[in-house]
Amino acid sequence: MHSKLLVTIALVAASVAGAGPAQAAACTGYVGLTFDDGPSAKTQTLLAALRQHGLRATMFNEGQFAAASPALVRAEVSAGMWVGNHSYTHPHLTQLSRAQIEPEIARTQQAVAAAGGGTPKLFRPPFGETNSTVRSVEAQYGLREILWDVDSGDWNNASVDAIVRANGRLTNGQVVLMHDGPANTIAAIPGIARGLASRGLCAGMISPQTGRAVAPN
Image 1 (tube, rainbow, N blue to C red):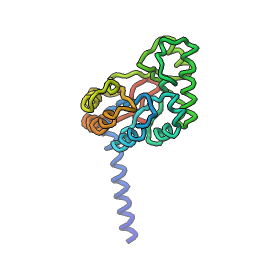
Image 2 (cartoon, rainbow, N blue to C red):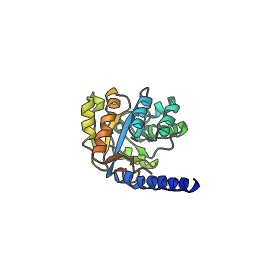
Image 3 (spheres, one colour):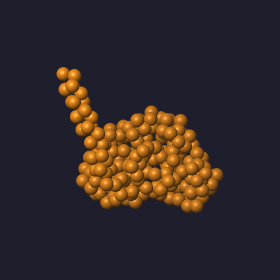
Image 4 (tube, helix red, strand yellow):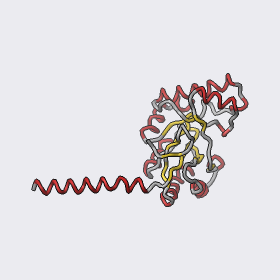
């Protein structure tokens, strides 16, 4: 009986060991799924959908919302997401002075860290608007600016199918813009997951060094 048990354990161990490389081989590339403007009342629903379909994403949080709902920031981290900086109040940064830009970034760094989201390494300027002054402040706080390669259009009432199709245009290393709140975005998650899997793409992290999606650490 004892020897049979050992053989069984060995077979199970061999099977599990063999599964690792096979799963890794399934990812022929990585893409960066990003969701702006949270955390919100929809965050928990979005996180549940992402987890159900095995997806990880970068959540570009507004500092004002992170400060108001620290438990949601912790929920993002617990769900395996990464948290980035999306300014404190979502202003048009290119219309502000350096003295006005600095607290937008600094306060969000502090709010996310205080909420348990870690100190962000990535920054997405609101509306994708940037200039040399914005980039200089980002550098001051050790942040990598992240825009996007594909815009899902979910901020403009894109349909579920349109959001899924937008994600279908992603190629290895690219980043897609989505948002925390829209119902159609959450409804699109299953289709996004199926589309990526069909092309051998996995949801990865965005590298602070290159700004491209890579395999998670």
